Length: 123
Image (spheres, rainbow, N blue to C red):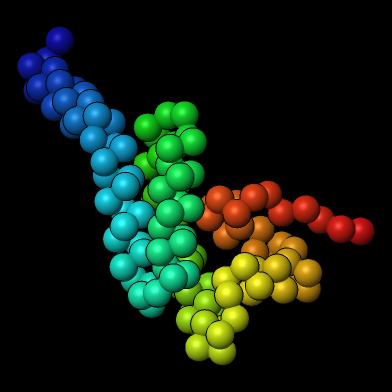
């Protein structure tokens, strides 16, 4: 075997091992980082508690890391709306329920990611 290929494969396996060993701590850090981007208040604290509890329920380290990374994907639109509605003293639960009633597919990903339960289609 070529020594360069062996060295690269050894380095890649070491990096992967370290990343997977640190995945739970990294996932918790990413959740806390995501919550810092929200407007401070009871809704942000509630979301952090829910997201951290979802992390504990996930079976593998890879799932935990994937969940934490998905919190950042496409979440800006919901964040803007949550902050706008929070200014109007409406809770996140009411916001999500209203969205689910008008268009169940609009918030299906957010509800599944945030651990609020699975969306149910009516009809």
